[in-house]
Image 1 (cartoon, rainbow, N blue to C red):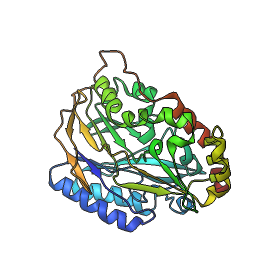
Image 2: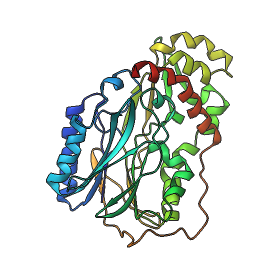
Image 3: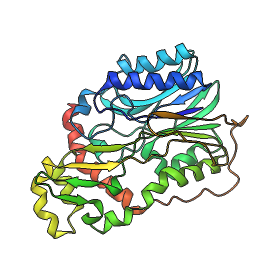
Image 4: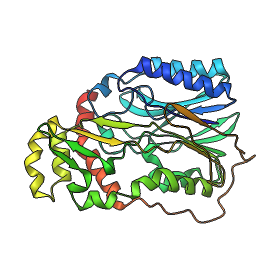
Length: 331
């Protein structure tokens, strides 16, 4: 198995596909039978109106690229991108088999500002492949124990594609040079500080061990920078308890947020222990794993998540605040 770590240039689809192809080919040459790419690997990750123009269809560039490369290399290949289905847009993790068969998992839980660009999926999906029964999740989905529970006793491998900026450690840059760190925006932000990091590392591996299946998770690396949708409303909601920051709300439309990414590209075994991580930069983790012959049944109670309740509250609030943007652009 191979989990790709790559940095995508925002909006540069062709350049990103060229980079991804080189990494996928190298992984296949190294013996990988399944390769997973990071969330939104084809477009990069950002919160701008450009996302509406980057949406594709099944007849689009990325869908054909994934299915074509999987067939050419004789591998299973997975990657996430914005896909229009009917009247709605989803963040879809497409898994392509070498024989042309495909499976589409739509991200169940868009995080916060992501709701301005795509809608929630309908929940877990099991891909019955030649490699076994594969469950799929995208990024913030891993913060929800019920999704792992839905896969319990039904899958032999867990595939995750992620692209999580460290929003709990972000900085907000205003046009006149003022910089505000996330912990300055109030008690809620401070409460979230440590727990989010655990979700994509220790917590994910604990859930994997509970399921008793191998897991691979692909992520980007480096720094993230972006404006945000409905910036005045979003910023106003986050600083409502800090009067000294209210004067900055009027500048929010010109502000940019920056943060590092959670860099936890990894492959874990059935016991949740890390088998492989990639070297620095554009690279991939590669490991030989034991896929159980049949879906194992959990033998212990499901582990608890360390995610602070404030994190879900913030995500839900921001999603609600930016939903009008999705509805407006969908028309």
